[in-house]
Structure formats: C-alpha cells, structure tokens
Length: 243
Ligand SMILES: *Cc1c(COP(=O)(O)O)cnc(C)c1O
View 1 (cartoon, rainbow, N blue to C red):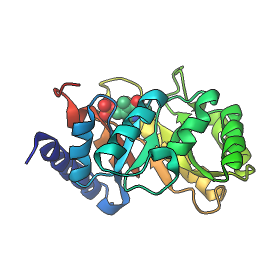
View 2 (tube, rainbow, N blue to C red; view 1 turned 30 degrees about the vertical axis):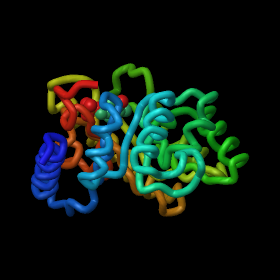
View 3 (cartoon, rainbow, N blue to C red; view 1 turned 180 degrees about the vertical axis):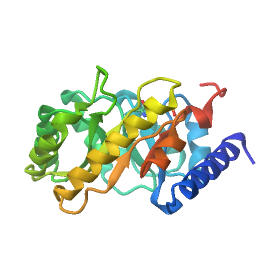
View 4 (cartoon, rainbow, N blue to C red; view 1 turned 135 degrees about the vertical axis):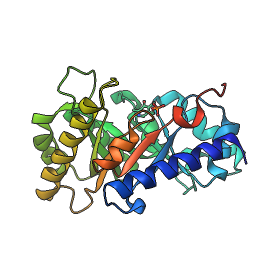
C-alpha cells in the first residue's frame, strides 16, 4: 500500500467519525482531492485508490494536469467532451477570459462569486451548447477576503444565477479564514450552512441546489460536523511529497 492510499484511508476514517458525531450518513460527503502540488504519477495513484474527483485552483495547471492524466490513463483529450472517469473541479479564482478553457475541462466550478463571471459562464456555455454546473462562492468569515460574495449578497446573486439558462446552480462553496481558532472556523461553516438552507428553501436551482463545498486539510472534520457535502483536501494527502 502506498503512502497516498494510506493517508486517503485515514482521512476517510476521520470523515466517518465526524459523520457519526453529527449523526450523518458518510455517503453524503464526497472528497475532492486537490492535486495542485503533485506530479501526474501521484495523481494516478489517487485515481487507482478509487478517487476520481480531482481539484485544481489555477486554469493553466488544470489544463496541463487534465491533459497529462488523460494520457497516463490512455483516455481521450480532456476537452474533447467525451466522458472520462476523472472529474475535474475548478476550485480557485477564475478570470472571465479563461472561462472557455475551464468549461471544456471541468465538471464543476466552485468559485463563481460575481454576477459578471456568472454571465460570462452562461454566455460561453451557451456557445458550447452545454450547461455549466457551478457553485456560488461566499465569504462566510465576515473578514475582508479577496474572493467570495458577501453573505448579505448571496441570496440575491443566487436568484440572478437562477435566471441564466445555461447555468445550473448546484450549491455553495466557502473557505474558512486561516486561523487555528476552531471556534472561528466553526462559526464560518455554521453561517455557510444557514445560508445554504435559506437559498435551498427558496428553491433556486430547480432542486439541484444540493452541494455545500467546505472543509480543507486543516478543518474538514469541523466542516463535516457542520454539514459539508464536498470536501476539498490536498496537503493532508500529499504533504511532504515532492513535486
Ligand atoms: C489548495 C486548496 C484547497 C486544499 O487545501 P489543503 O489545505 O491543501 O487541503 C481547497 N480549496 C481551495 C480553493 C484551494 O485552493
């Protein structure tokens, strides 16, 4: 057994324990493996361990890794629109001029935080003849953060996204502030979950609004306890391994 699969198994056990504490079914929580620091051979190990939802935060790297991994697996080119067993998630800040590249490769964009970006995604996916699955990224920390819509603006944004015919709003994404203070982290996740339930109750997203992407290596257990359905985990799997 490789180190990577050992760590994946350990994290899986931690997730199951957090689910048990919160009286949740472990099947409700999906791990997106964030591969931004590792070489294709390690990504292949992840896939061989049974994890096929992968995340990158930069467009250039997403495109490159999707291509290299497809080659390693002897699959078609990732932007050929032929279904692959690997699903790529775009989790980082996205500029409007990179939308087309991302739409061809990724199955879910976690980081949509402005009306202008959503409009661009809507337009480009219309041209490509597809529908784009997106999450609305919110800033639940209350501190000035670079990215993420303010909590107070989220419901209205979700409503506007709902009116765009080539978008499917699948849920919310958030990042806790970088702090060791677990109460601050938990408060952030609690706020995101409340907002998630509020928007869900409005029935935006035609019943597809079901995903709450929150929790990273440092805080995924708290995120699970507070209702995350998708975790984005990188360094807990790969720390100490070289590029
Ligand atoms: C890097 C990254 C992660 C994973 O972070 P780790 O601390 O390595 O688990 C999750 N989400 C986003 C948006 C990231 O950029």
